[in-house]
Length: 299
Image 1 (tube, rainbow, N blue to C red):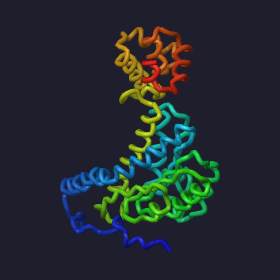
Image 2: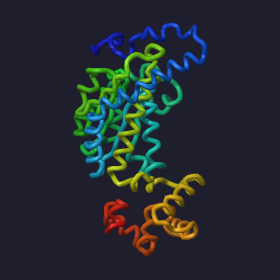
Image 3: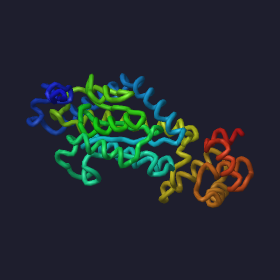
Image 4: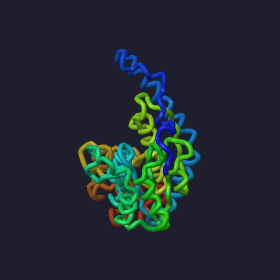
């Protein structure tokens, strides 16, 4: 049996909030804000563990592996959200970073009762994805004990994948089940047991780090510029134009013409301008340097 929920710090009741149903709105809002302010400090304590996991993940991704998040409830929704933002932000194929939520797509918008308690369903989800040795599987669970997530990590381990467990309690079973355990201990919630609050915020911050830093290490940025983003709307197209101009110093007309010739690819447009080459030559140069713009510019 897994340790009962009442023993978990995320399930404790904080007496500071025991009268919130009698307080004016602004006072409740200030209490919540004060509680939220403690989350970044809790994340900071876990940065060594987070960094170790990211190094291991990016090493496998550089060899062609995928990053797969698995969660239930709020944790699963946050996982799917983070994964879904990678293609537009970093130009990745949707299969590279994926989120798996207990209960399937329906659970994104409404609760699917009992889904998180099904360990076999978690394992089956990993089998359906044909997880392999180059993949990295990050289990996300505020309690650190969701059977769906534990089942998924167990299946990932059998298949030789890298396993990471992200939870918000000390000594979580999820940490014991993973090669890299990340525990961001945020303590009791303003509304007792509502881990969509501080715990959810903590998980979102860590997932931001995992995906963003992994992509940076894979060369998906140039400095802090999103040079691999997909310019799928007018706002992003304008951002791409500004990036090309900022990096190259070119005027608007020159940058726009290069982007058009490059099919909207910022990195290709930059190389075309900086090296005075056409789009095909720029793409070839990028490929020679592992798609890293900084290397291609200096090469």
